[in-house]
Image (cartoon, rainbow, N blue to C red):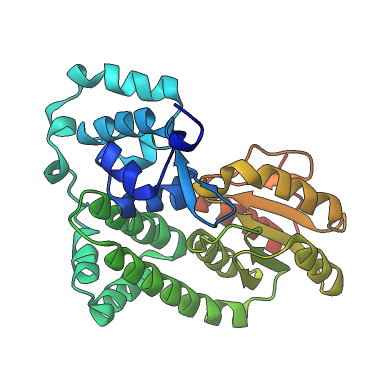
Length: 308
């Protein structure tokens, strides 16, 4: 087979694997696989070598595993999941109908499925008032986003539902954060993602948690050039820069964070988290949960030294 025939269009890749085009695009964005190569003509082509792995991923999904577990898994881990298939409990083999959203999430998911913006907002605001910031994000927002992604992958909802929910969640998180920012008197923390990172909901949730902890949140959003972050940190009394990293940016995050750390003033702490965040390095602090972030923010607001 010559080099030209070793590449597939996304449509050909979809036909070869039985995976919908929109699903392949979502996996590329969310998990960094499959990765295309852009030709001089501008066309995106995928390596033929991706086909066997995608077929194995489709097998694992058919056995009841989640996309978040298998798309980014190593070949060894994926092989173990498939080899263990006979030992899986019946619920794990029952197919899409077995993956029912938790009782607390199901009504929210129905609002999203029906594009009921007001009903969704009212329900989430009521949960916010009852649960408090961290529990609200951990038990409502994060599971809801996960549930709609899984429903989309199972073909029960469309990408338009996922986009609708993402926009509604983004607007709500911003509106909940703004009053907290106005009352906050703690250190100034800038929030951003690095160039190429367009996933902003994790960043929104992080900014909300630190604003509730008493920090002044300066939300810059996604895809912010490193020199701009450095200039901001020098011009304003920024105490920390918080960078969110999704799975899709896992491969490039470490280098970007190192460049940012090297250029930031020494007085500015650099914090990172998210499913794609690399292991901590000198001068780069890693938080692994919103609860841990809340504790980090409260220490910062009180002027206490970093743990460890």
